Image (tube, rainbow, N blue to C red; front, top):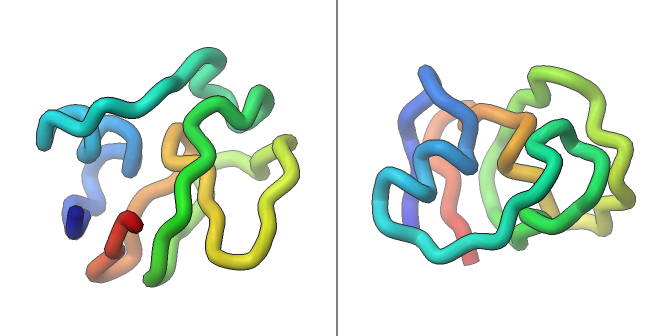
Length: 70
């Protein structure tokens, strides 16, 4: 899945494209929506969940250009 919409969170863009993704807090805390992605994101608020390289929390970020969700 490729996300380019910068006007909504990556999670909202994924859901609008029919993605089946788990989400709970939508505040970057629980990590339920943690996803592997390549590309740049901008966090709207600093995520509290642990992220490894290549992982994002789509509930609290927006795409910065083309973002590929693995």
